[in-house]
Image 1 (tube, helix red, strand yellow):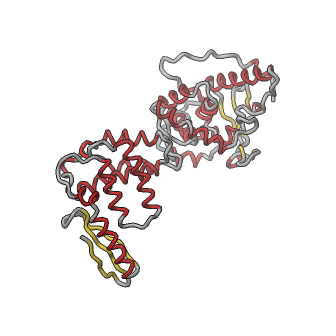
Image 2 (cartoon, rainbow, N blue to C red):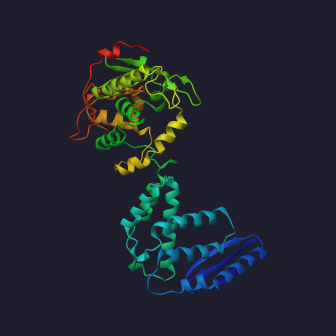
Image 3 (tube, rainbow, N blue to C red):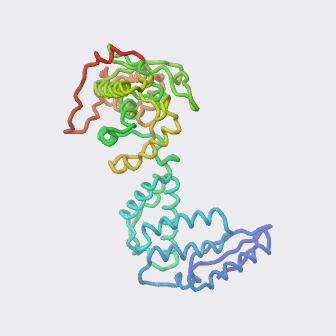
Length: 391
């Protein structure tokens, strides 16, 4: 059932899917000829046995595979071959792969959550997954609006919440700003033990350094005697170094966990020197030596998303290591002014973002205990050997 309506200087093509009582849809045409062409396409599609027979169903199983195919066929009849149509076809492929054999009446919140997790494991962007879930919701609503299933037959699904949460993720599928819990940090460090990302994570979680500051950190920045780290430069995009943000070089205390990790890295560098490799100037050199390219580093972090998911850790950006550092220090009682000094930010900036966190009189970073409960401790080695070599 389709018709044309006059709307000012343009025309509107209207039709109902699923018969006289089906949902009304419409599209705008710039001329009478374009409207008549669209009307002919709609009527031709409506007379096709596949789509028409499907929407006339009442009762019986309604598999998502068939439902999505019928919906796509009906939708495509009202659009030109465009990016929108191609995007929906791609989304439906994801839906059919995971949910195709499922009756739409069995699609509950738990199955939607599993579906979202499966899509995220394919390294899709958060906004991409949100689009797929939105298309799935539209398909389910089409079955309901056309009377194929009754409203009371469909389990309650919080579609809006799922789509909103996915859209809050950035282009890499990671939350824009959040903090990992201590348990999550412990699982992260344990999961990446023995990989190239372990030391960067250890440094960032225990100093709050920005990514560029960590990638350009030289051995000469370590004050082994006073157990502190000087943050005075940052990696420049495209190569080289530059001054730190706010032009505020600063010192951050070095706790026992970080000192142990640095000593282990120093030992690895010394073993490499015995094999004829030069000792790097940088604590965390890139795969090809020199400063680790920021784009390459971000790619390495993105490729580790499956490791995070497998260890029940939320997908957050690398910069959230800094938020985690600040948050846990303030929660442990370190004054805001002290934290601001350690991370090289103004007190007002820290107050603006973290004033809701209680503070106290803790004055060291030893409160950052990210070890897993019951995990064996790494033997602590003296820093005297480290003082014998300068870079």
